[in-house]
Image (tube, rainbow, N blue to C red):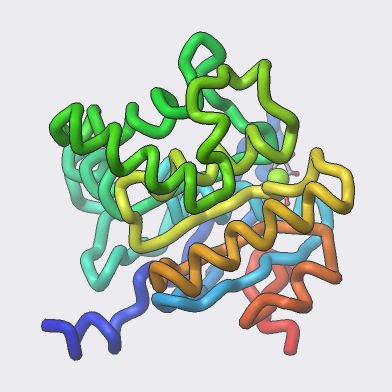
Length: 232
Ligand code: ADP
Ligand code: MG
């Protein structure tokens, strides 16, 4: 099994097509896009605004369904699964980080990280312990009782990262996660993401406009005419 897992991409996007209808016109955003994401590999998705980065991430994260093509998660095709099964895979295998933190404002950092684990049915005492560990690992050990409004932008984003990895996903998808941060804070948040890839062997896909950060990742891809192209 372990050997098999190593030879199968964590996520494989096969011939993905996605169109949006705008009145009379049809916008083709993804047109046969193919991409394999591997365990332990960090991949930068660098492409202009409007080229379909968010669309690709949402499809890879099973948040949106493609018009054609298939999304494989650890070798399993997902297009024919029931909503319940897709939701199950999303909860256990996929972590998502957005440009804005999207934490629940009335909950503490600890509770925000506990929630996805509680939803999965883990015991409360276990989720507390695990959430404390993850937050401490990301340098937030002394911020666990703070609410989002009582945290800096970089701290909020690191809590969002902690929440995304709380269920030990196979893949972490991040949509311009440092886009709202100043350069120093962006550096800190980026380092947290890279540290997680090394420590947990999660696969990571980050949409970013930051070429300097992209240059420090394992691989760079772009979107050209709706297809994924390797940049180097
Ligand atoms: P990026 O993240 O690279 O900026 P997006 O994936 O957000 O690009 O969007 C790609 C294109 O698809 C854009 O032109 C956008 O306007 C269009 N688009 C995205 N979502 C929708 C939607 N729900 N309805 C219609 N057009 C959309
Ligand atoms: Mg986007």
